[in-house]
Image (cartoon, rainbow, N blue to C red; front, side, top):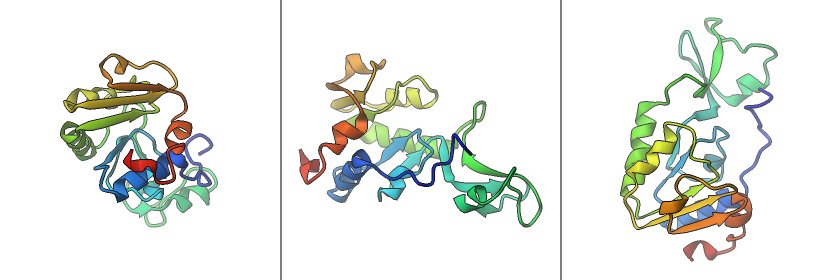
Length: 176
């Protein structure tokens, strides 16, 4: 819980900028490795959470779903109210495969994009890092603090904090 669940986290300027793009029909979808649910909390509708989200939890025995509150309000291991099974966040842990339908949707969005913004990722975690191979559009933009394997093929590379870079574009500049 200490490392995965942060219910007080709020969308930042980058999340809000992406939402503004979606509202102007300039953004088709978001593919994210983050499990914090902040893109959806910012209002984006077509979000492919490759590694799942802490906002959806389920019983490993009977598959009953629970909200995040079940995790935050429980001491120790959360247990199902119906069968007593362990309640687990719907996140992909090391060694687990991501949901194939989420991956298919994410790859479809990437393959249909004319511009792809890759932000805040080292592109070192698979399978998400390989999703970039589906992009054949015109403009690849990479925003990251450190160099990535995609920098050489990018149309534009911006170094720095994603929230500072995209958040600085708030206030009606989503069209630019």
